[in-house]
Length: 515
Image (cartoon, rainbow, N blue to C red; front, side):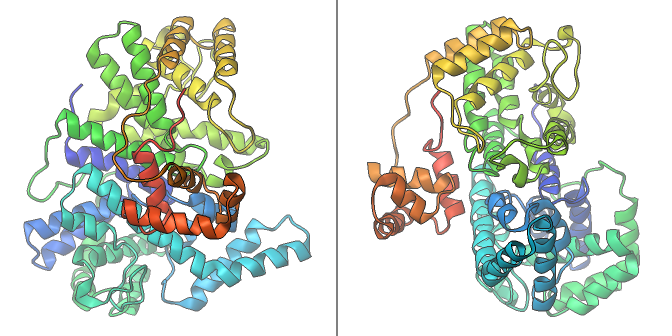
């Protein structure tokens, strides 16, 4: 396949973050256009403009972590994020009002006393809890950006997405020139887009005036206000799906870097829920081995692995409240789940060079008898790569825990997969190849850290979303001992948040299910 450029690959990832933040598709690209124009108006260098470009596209690449925590508080993290985007984070009254409204909506069907008690508990700890979540977003954003191969200034800027000019941001309350200029510029640009979309040009201009010297650097706000009319017209006239040229020219990707990007994007997806950690990488490994056993050409097996890494990227557009629900889904919730395959196609097809991967990835849940979703092509329209991916995904999901059930044993999962083939829903050859691949799964590779076996157990439980007391019960140790282990783990792996530790566990195979 023709490899995408760096800008092209990041465009697809940016569209995924649009879905994850409940913003319109290409919100990131539109804010990128505005940020690059503002950088030009400010006389920034090509290097500075390039930093603003990627900050706008990828500002929220760390924000898919701990969405289950937000959903447990507010019911639907996507609705919360959509509403939160327009709020001045330093306006405590506005933030508290929004939190209260979302909590009332989340608990609307509960008995009055129970609802009031729950709302009161969350209101008491919401500021502290969300500060921890935001710190995790920053750490995961930096780690993913490093894996993608960005230079240190871009990595650092992406870790400052919640900082403000006036020092009232999070997590480090950086002030003034201590904040990366690209982070400040993109905060302004994205706020402008949000308020322009919601209420028009006058409202966007009023927001910039009100937040000048607060969230926004005065010189940046002034540059926008001088050219507001022309800038807003340009953004409004940007064609849907259009890309913005990367300052200094785009970069070609080689095979190794594109693979690293696909792997980072897979973890960006899977970290949304503690029930899916390392799911995509596990499916990719299984599908690639099955493809080889079927004699597919090496290039096709490689493309299949990449499609498998990206097959669930559309999940970011569905609330974690559904992915983490411990009971049967309602009909509307099942319809939301079915949409994720469509979102996968939307995200990947935003970059022409990823069209072939989009075609295979979006067919993961289609079936030979037409019973799947969302395309429902005739059986002849399902290429062998798509058939293998469907079988690999189905098997791997069976051997993983889910919120509503425990993992099936390998033997039980094999029997269920074979039943799908016998019923004509999955391809028999693909299922046989997947089962063969699962029976010869490689052993875990050598470890490259100094964690003890007990620390690995603690890390694995932490990554699965367990609270400290739950980890203590699982391992038969005291909460104080768990805390002692966590301090050592964080120091050894150089992270500072649960989110960072979770991503480290994914990166190093500690969360992987061995099919």
